[in-house]
Amino acid sequence: MGMKNKLVELVNVSKSFGSTKVLDELCLEVKENEFLTLLGPSGCGKTTTLRIIGGFEKPDSGKVFFDGADITNVPANKRNLNTVFQKYALFGHMTIEENIAFGLKIKNKSDSYIKDKIKYALKLVNLEGFEKRKPTSLSGGQQQRIAIARAIVNEPKVLLLDGVTAKDIILAIIAKIGTGGGFIYITHDQEEALTMSDKIIVMNKGYIQQMGTPEDIYNEPENAFVADFIGDSNIIDGIMLEDRLVEILGTKFECVDEGFGRNRPVDVVIRPEDVVLGEEGQGILDGVVTSLIFNGKTMCSQSSFENASRKLSATSSPTS
Image 1 (cartoon, helix red, strand yellow):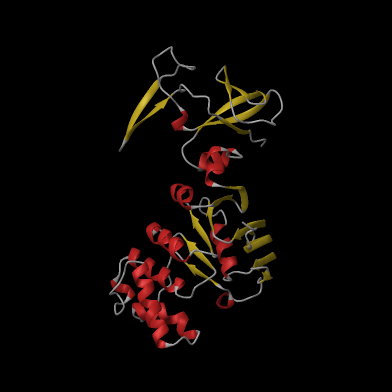
Image 2 (image 1 turned 180 degrees about the vertical axis):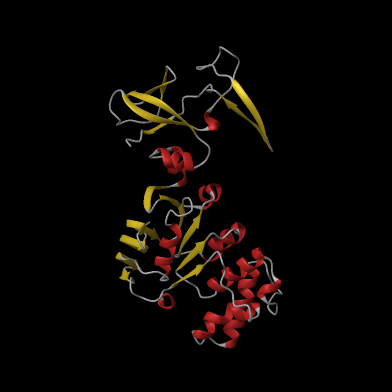
């Protein structure tokens, strides 16, 4: 297979609101057939990034490229991408079919073309027969699906999704119309990011903390923020004795990391699924279970420290 084309590229994009810098020299790219998720806590800059890509905000500095062309100053309605916002932005005085047809009428599409597109889109989002209803008669989830339908009838090259929760619909869209296009999705839901994405960008305070596949982000967090934000983690102080050998709680463990040097302080990430409990005295470490919490399918235990397996990942200790 040949190299995939870059659909969207941000180069050194910065943005401030008043004295607050929201993005600082941000660089990212989305390629053909790629589902990119921007993940991070509230205020990390992910929505501002999406709005800049969509044309609803202008960066203070830096460039936005689409299919190789500079679109930094191109208005939102002239970009071959569509955004589905958390607020949905449906027109309350219009019927569902009028909402979906809005962009197509601006493009002077024929009535028969528009009718076919409305039927196709409503079927895709599982809301057939809703053509004559008003948005106010729909639930929040149904309004979200209509917003998605309105976006996809315009056949955007890239679909921008802000906090959309209709996971089944997103996956259906990827399966049916995703070829050659791209998706940028923003969420604070780690599970959705891990299960749906080809690439994840973890953001915090306007900076990219880590960029990589879901497997990379989960198994090899680059710093304590990513390790703590993605999934459940036990982060324990340790000493990197040498490549692939770390000491925690007075015990040496083989690990997967190298390049830290010798006898360096590190944060050691131990995922819950990497902990194996056994009989007292039979494990590598002895610990005391201090509480039990019922969590549906499983019973979660909290311990003063746990018997740990040898699948460990070390991250650099913060210097500040």
